[in-house]
Length: 134
Ligand SMILES: [Zn+2]
Ligand SMILES: [Zn+2]
Image 1 (cartoon, protein in one colour):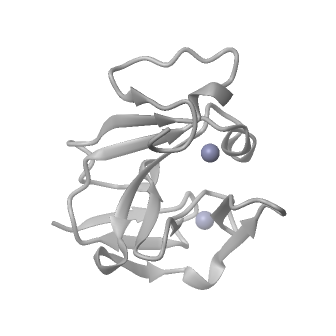
Image 2 (cartoon, protein in one colour):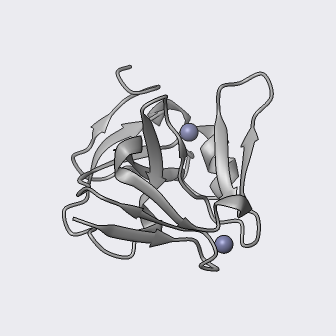
């Protein structure tokens, strides 16, 4: 299975050579400030199943000082783009995907204790007060 994804301006584009199912939504205050919304929704893919098709030199990464949080984004349009999750995996913002989204479901809500006061979390995704596993 091949799934393509791209940023809003189309400069940064990539391909996943796997199917994706699990969506993780992070509701932490840093992701909320970064997106301006309720947080960010991502799926996780292994480095082996990910290929940049174009625009990788336009990907900028910002690390929050004194923190392990980082974000990668298109330096032209500002869309969040895939970035390093750990040594073996990337996180991929799911709204960038152009196809292959029919089996996606929210399986985990992270940092629910930091969610916006005005947000009501719905659905049957598992809610974690902090990081995955907490
Ligand atoms: Zn862009
Ligand atoms: Zn977060």
